Length: 203
Length: 192
Image 1 (cartoon, each protein chain N blue to C red):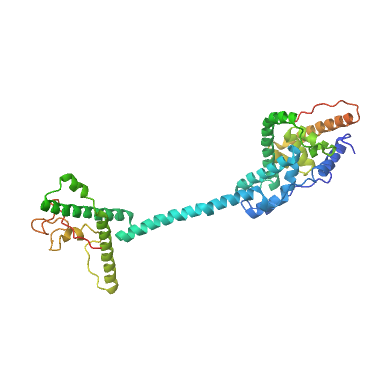
Image 2 (cartoon, chains in turn blue, yellow; image 1 turned 120 degrees about the vertical axis):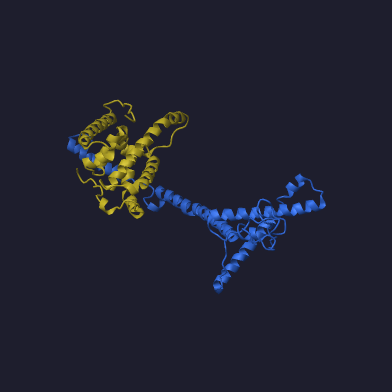
């Protein structure tokens, strides 16, 4: 048969030649496992379930860990409440440090105002840490009391607002919590702004 | 058509998005796609690259595949588009290739042998015409399936096939005359 001839003859010749020359050609490997699409999908899967997953777990743990630390420190999982409680503890510590410095300044009368201001935040870490520990101890005690069945009524679980501010120096601040009058309640270290002096926390 | 292989009309057995089914489709159709592409492209390496590119594209679109045509026809449509893109890129590279070949002789191309005379002439046809001939006379596609694979209206397929066959017949006849010394060789344009 030649490529010349009638249309039908040519079609038959064409089919035969195509099968002989092209139809017998084989590629390197028709195995799916070696195909490019499989390699690409494996790469994507490893990206998703490998590093990506590790990163996701790391971020999750970081967030969860941070929350756990914050929750342990403040006794609540509510982020708004967490922030507020930490801020309260820090503020109380600042007040306490200022008050202590004021006592020293008055007694020694040597520090100038700038030096006093610079000292304002000194030791605040210790104070905050002690405040957190004290707060945790208090909550543990409350939980223990609850389990023992002798739950004591607590006016608030928020530190620094009701209980801490109202304690003064332990000599009886019976007024509105946090708004004691320094002249008549507490030990005279209360500020005119209304906050009584905080007790020195003990870790 | 005499004894041409029939395309696998097994789309009902393939589930879109199923990796297992796609693997089966790959193994069932790889050689047929490769055969089509080796006609449309210049060498085996290009055909292999384009087959892999075809399956890569198809795999991405596999979850959205709709069995309104056989899966193999759908793959051929992708493959032909990949091959056309490849040929366009090849043309851009040809200038540099020609300059390089002037300096050093190229490796012998097995498809330049007389056995591949038909393939050479098919490659010289417009790509879609060559694809239509391969799909019909190698794979046994119907006009409808060829139309789907080429992305053209079905009514144009019969005339396209007839024109492609006539042109190929003339070219091959000229080659015979050249071989017998009755016709001077002519330069065959690669793409039209």
